[in-house]
Length: 262
Image (spheres, rainbow, N blue to C red):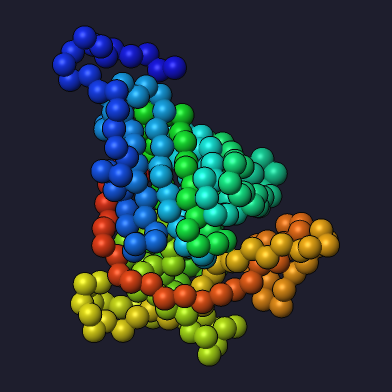
């Protein structure tokens, strides 16, 4: 455990805390995250957690924890925890259901997708205050000219594609993004220059990149017509592309400099 300089005789010593009091991020009533670190519970030591609630298809966006390993425990529902092994360059996908865990080593790129409604995950970290660097921040803060030059891309297309990403997404798809069911093979996302709290804003249009788990009763490889390619090698499952609507963001917290600190 971490070395503690805590004075356990102090009247300020804390041994209990209600995690529901510390909302980290809220997309809507079904998709939000509460957090607990040594900043809320001063006797916690070298551990911390995120209490994650997701509905079908919602994604804890791709990110890394630069200072902690993450153990994801499924309390209710179901999710797929995906990570890239930096030593083999493999994308690994681990479906978890209640009582099952997936472990993400420190510094590994990963994300979690809920495959049923009312999914409840507990993410446990071996750091007193976990830090994170999110994909949305990398995309929106890196100049389009650098991305275009580095990867031999059209700068105008890169800029137009990334223009809607104006802040950290955290739980995606963004709240002002709705599915264009008429053109499922051609997702388009249009920038919205108005604040999220304006009721007459035209929504972004995007085919949802999330998945719904369907177990094969025969225990064989089973893929539906609309398979997400990221999950093609996963056994015993078919991943379909559903649609959904979302309500606006209600909370956002960002720290510039050393990534996010919960």
